[in-house]
Length: 381
Image 1 (cartoon, rainbow, N blue to C red):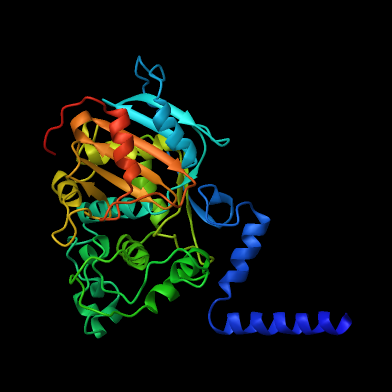
Image 2: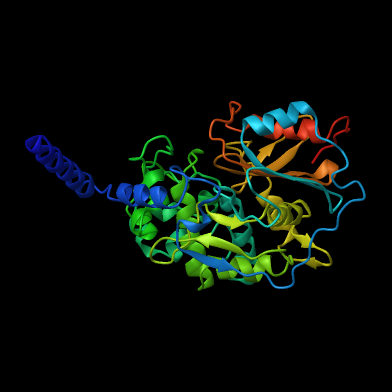
């Protein structure tokens, strides 16, 4: 028995050494974090697992509640779907007032929940702010003007901020969430995000075609940090969180060096996510102030010729009877904007097997719109 245990220990040590030498040492960090702090896979409740930067608010201003707040019961059909897909919150704002609000799985209106890839859309908002502030010339500015190393690459010298937002960067990166050795898994737990990003090469000319790649968003975050000369959480607080009178401060997870996980991981409440949707649905205007230029917001919400379901890291559906734009994050996080109904829907959850259409849009977005906007007559966006 002693020989067997010794052999097992030696074999385990050898395997661990091989894993570390191959660049997958982050797997041990992931295992330790998950065993110590909750769910064994990425979760909307990961706020305490990683270091983070605060996103302070200033003067909290709760949503005004509609006279019909929580008086209209949801159908059994949509409630069953929300239960099946492990929803943690559902919130509806219409005409600028809170119409419906419901929480599950020990969450409430003050719970900070992981945005996952909805953060990519928030990056595009910050690009608009940076253009307005003069930190960026436009979304067509070359990345090499901020990181000269890209100017030394045949493909990299053509890379623009727009390419990063529209997922047309051309990186040698396969978006994969299903196994621990994928670059996405490494990205979630790696200690130095910049090192990982700058190690990714190109396989084709930027702008050639659409391919969803989280590394593009992380590079966009690094570009923004350098352009505005401050961390992303501070800039988000200054430009959005304080100006929208968010009800709660948020947090943005970072790597061990303090760099925000720009591809994901802004932890905020459903109520405050809804304010982001309302701002963009209003083309950057909040009350009597234009926080982001109207022209930029329209460009941000315009689908690309390469993929008519995708804008500046915000998704589009102009084929449905009721047209919409939406932020979309892993495990079913949505901020859905429906201009025809002056409605914003926020849904968060834990489910990683949502059905999608041929353009990779989750079908649940359409079902939520159908359930919450029955009998409405659509008009063009």
